Image 1 (cartoon, rainbow, N blue to C red):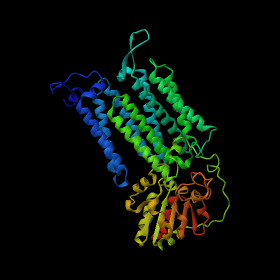
Image 2 (cartoon, rainbow, N blue to C red):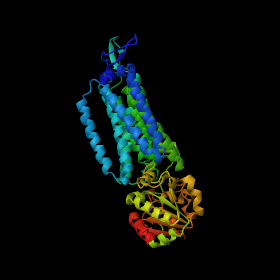
Image 3 (cartoon, rainbow, N blue to C red):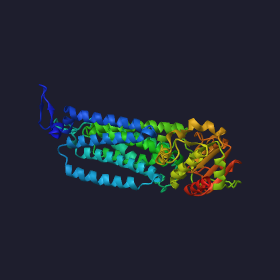
Image 4 (cartoon, one colour):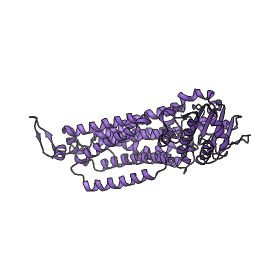
Length: 506
């Protein structure tokens, strides 16, 4: 009875409810107050989810709010679509849910950034498919309106407003898909991290975007709209997504991930209008806005122009950085686990700076054990997290939270950078670009202008990396390697920290 009320109750002028089946989805959504209330509750849950995800301490609760909101939205949508095959939908949900569950259980934290990029591509493609379905069968989406043709005969055509929604949603979805595929290939190592600079790339990008907007306007105005416009808009959008991401180098990939997250949200919101689905509009707008804000924050942390990044590496130089960076043979000092254990046990304060190398080695748990051993010896231990450490926003925070590192020991760049001058030991584990002074001194460097940790001001620096051959994801050599107070700990991060722990425990 509750299900029937949710799906069919229609408010009559005298204030009572009749149970006549609505003619279409839009009518059900527009008349039934319970559907609107359910979507409102789902929207509130999504807002609470974003609020919870703003802090590691409340992120679990935020995830739960998001799950509850999505459950409410999905159930409400299913019971208000009368012509849908519940069996087919259940099978699709079971297949997708199983795949997602298996991937979530098996995925390593090192592969999480490329997984996020892959998921963004799926959201983009979903928007493209929904727009394509609406274009092929507009009657099922209730987007047809009467129109008098040149002969004075009334025909049914797609609502001009719906055409704009379809074209923009499909275009944003296509850009998200192709851009996310390139981001996945770069993050997964199938493509190099160096920017790929095409000649006249800005002219090509601008011309393609203008063409998409002009064709979208033609698609909305013409009655009837030429059939070739919609597929051409899709093709150009797929191309521009590819062109926007290939010139962006590895150092800017965290911004790319958050930017693609924003695109996927706006694509979902546009399709929400086509589907007359309030929950999709709310969710898409929240994801799109939060992703844009996060991208802006990431750009500020890297001293990058937000407009320049989303324009496809605008301002990046054709030389410098990348996989082919030239290294100069310079003297450096090699340290051992015993050296590191002795120096840190005698210190008053140790600051740990983790990077992607820690994620690769899955060394976060032994690192926390090391900090526990140091704290038992009276040493103050703090973690310094750069906003762009890793391959996606918050990558290091997630890893440390997984290892149960106390939140009050984790500090952001602006809160801790001034402490290095008074710090006895800076312990860099698997990081490079976020501690590279070239960001302040070398104008030709791809990371120039990015705020970095001043680890060189610490009394002693231990730099843990696999070998002297690596130069970080941005492809820039690091002067910290060769400083007088730096000792290089060349080994697998997890293995080296385990050896340090043994020495500390003795």
